[in-house]
Image (cartoon, rainbow, N blue to C red; front, side):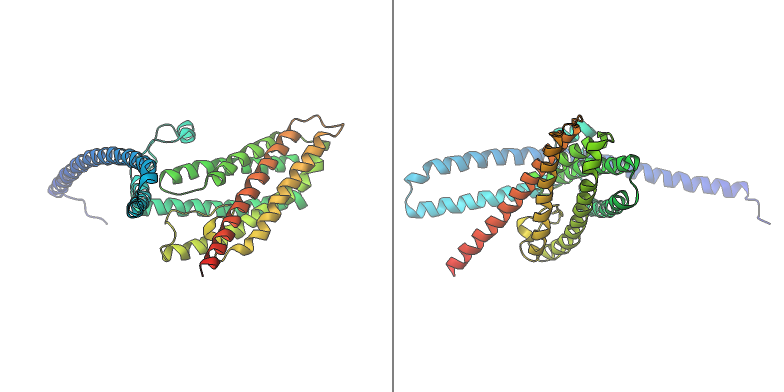
Length: 341
């Protein structure tokens, strides 16, 4: 049987709570004071960086103008200054990754003017790691659902669920990537833009009503979706390992991400993925050609046929020529290196 606490014990507990409350209040006051100091420091550093960048830009233009009238020694000095200016730009980029910045148009539309800058390395890396896991898990789910729709269930309802999942997945990716860019991730323009195109394509597929045209393209689309998700899984698995190795060697940034394509840093160790990627790109072209032919079918009345064909062609052109440009650049670098030797 528990003992009933006495009044004096209750009074003593209350006094202890009062002391603890006073300490909490003092700590919170100090926290708010430091927060105000931090905000002032952030504003001051941001203004200084903006001013420095503007002055460096003006100096760089001035050096270019006077470069033609310089002697050999002066040209070397100018080249050294220009190299240092480029390095300074990278340093500023690293600094700005830890400073609040205005959201771009897309984030403003989706989230409003909310500060999405993460202030610690641990928080940035944790968010990046969570983004990578999100892509991996959703890719596996998409493989399973596309396989189920293709071989087990022939229902417009399950197809709609699959397409809705694709819309949500690509919308979420665009938001998360915009936040990661704000926090220092260097994602190439096309690899961000192609997610917007994929969102539009998935949205149109979602609205496509069941009928002859839809059934003529359905199996081809689901087969392509299975293959695309499989290749994305391969890319995540091998790219994440390659990035981890390069980060350990100090050759890549901590906020670099896996992408659904081919970038220059993948040249060492990941070239075996290129045939899978090019096959997927040409499958996108095949989808576009199929849809353009279906649009000319006498029974075709749905606007979705043509509006799906156009994004597939844009995706093919963007993916193919971006990948081709990276491969071409690497071959040129290799040839220059062999000539120097």
